[in-house]
Picture 1 (cartoon, rainbow, N blue to C red):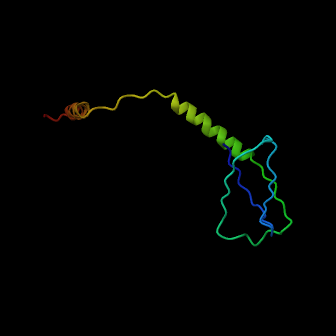
Picture 2: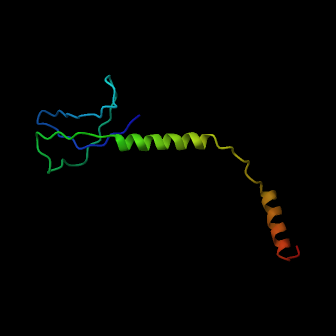
Picture 3: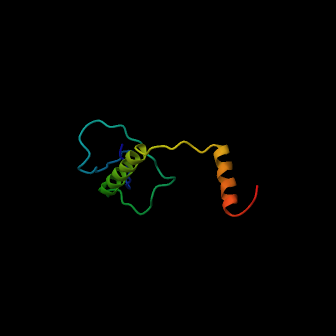
Length: 99
């Protein structure tokens, strides 16, 4: 899955034209459009804004590497209450307290 963020122009006939980055292969895709509450007033009707997803690709790759590293971590069992209590008692004794 890839996320591409860009400003687009909606024409009077309610169509949207988007130039995708060259990394996107031709074919059929399912897309999700999220529109802001109001149209931007600083775009012109004939304006086409190219989209670059290099930063998105880099971020996606970084997250995928991180997830793979986390999945390979070994889990240590959580300390039980009795182990924690023993640890506290030992710590207090090292500080000279008699229990």
